[in-house]
Image 1 (tube, rainbow, N blue to C red):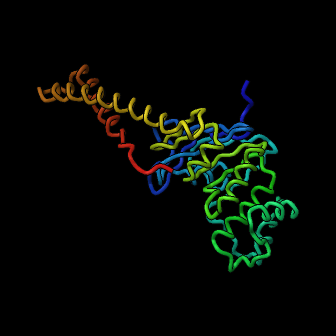
Image 2: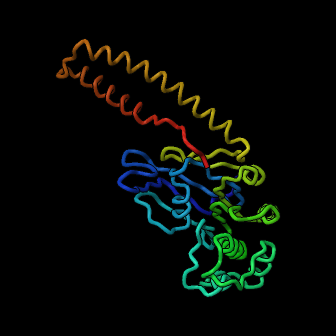
Length: 274
């Protein structure tokens, strides 16, 4: 029997820039459930909302619709692509800040594995040094759920190998966004796919993702072909002249508009995935 989720979003809907990024006014929204030992890749085209979904999970932004539930006591830690170190003197000051700061000795131990001097001045630290400091803080925080946004950026091969080993031993759940295919293939056991405002889940690691994606798109293409054939028949019927006042014809016209809207929503799924 599967364990209950430690975090869930049900009916999640979010608007950005005047459009619905997730869900919509006439859709049920997206559902997300994360179990206590999940190891998941989050995949989607650029602009699909992967980082935004992480922020919703971490309760950093407010959704327009839906309900977020978290198991009491669950500690969620988000590793952001660009950590904000403004106001901190050293990288260690950043790592130990806040009421939920990790133990100093844990930060020092992980920082040593990542090859980062935590006494480095934050103002002069490079982007790579900032990222490693943020990673040391995140891993040392003993999270129940890790949200990792491009965790291997700025890491050398030795540091990536160490991180893979750490995550393999890690007893909590993690969701990762990454362009590092090898990293995803080695570590993930399930895949979340953000696609055109919807979220799909498959109990396969990233290694099986492309076959799954191709199967989904092939089925959509078959459905689109069938719908095109129906639309052609209905368009021919419409061209013969329709008395809209007849109740039967009104219903058929409404069905035609629905089919046209459905076909218009079948957006070309091409584009870079990450």
